[in-house]
Image 1 (spheres, rainbow, N blue to C red):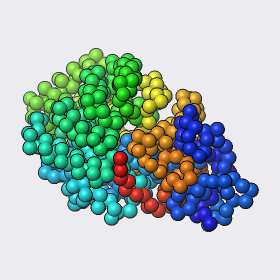
Image 2: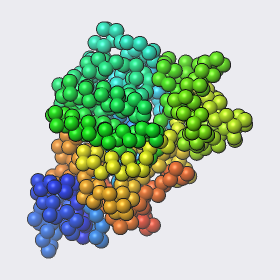
Image 3: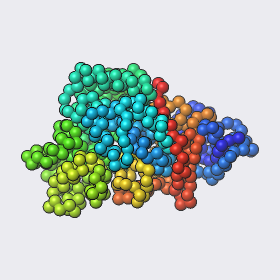
Length: 553
């Protein structure tokens, strides 16, 4: 007997349109089939195609809706949130079943010294006590806690460097390099999928190319993935791409270019160069992929958006002290105005930065306000930089902001590239709607639906099979998951049922914590975690069947 049987489902296997491998040929994409689940595994064989399919404890009539593998978020940041938001409502209700966390160099281990203090301060408001230091202790922590989603992990180079070298802008010593190497070796042997860098973020940004090479060579030795948020995505994008591709070619590691973009109108033309150089690297034998979220605004800490890299040295306390010093503050204002060409663009730049999340609850009125609006509201005599600096000071350099800096044309082009997957670049939330505690980027709630609805169905940018593949089979291949990401007999039953005609992203920058329309059922490891609630959205069941996944080469 089956545990679950889906009848009248339009089956999409997670394969690429031109991939005829597997037991369900591509010719069957979109055909009506019956799909079973037993003991957490997919049952897909001849008995389910007969007129009398086997009995099941629960029979679900999909009524012509699409059934595909659960979505895999190839670029996620839920390392910490997985421990305090186990129901993962924001992503479960979007159809996600698996995340790859630890991106942008921001992993959850190792943690010691100033890096531990920084992360503890950041996550204390969520009730999280960081009682682990090593990868082993973090894995044990995850194993002891329920989680809705499956989670794979990257080692974050920024966290690693901060724990070994602190927040100082200096070269690592020989002893510190050996310590970092040892951590990478142990992390890979313990089951990490690879290593990430976020070379725009301190303290990871203080590492040289040689230091990155040293660590990436170990990742390559184990067959792992090197995922990199480049050192620049704007004026020095070309130089940052040089560094990334040279690391890839030197180490021959599998590589992922994180959230491909060109930030700022004067840099938008560089996307064509990015495409050409990625093609050239692949022609030289580099196994290279990319990811992108389907929105034109980024989201990160406000200090990183505002300040030049050298002003981030020393960590949050040092940043606050710099901004309190009158002369240093004046010099930083001058540099920001020159860098962003605010004297040319006028106040428009301040309208393109929106405050997203604050650490201090007393500052909540700032959330959802642009720097221009916050300056007016907070009585800063119309000076948005002064208002932003004071916000960073008061909030201990823990404020997050959304930055509108990308072009619609580039977004459409990048999403259409065959080697680009979809990643949300967001962490999970366990509250939705008005109950959500902050003002997140809408990508935290709407990423898969936006791709399937706005870009595939409505704009016709990519076909439905491709849109599904970019969020299922392709990231599974990049992670080298051996039994997930496709509809195959015996594969883990991570499944989502959605209506292709009505699926839609309902999250907006003004009201971001809105679950998508058109998601019906979500199954993780054979357990129903979301089901229809009658208004074309899904409701959670509260189940937490997720697993900590480990890389085995």
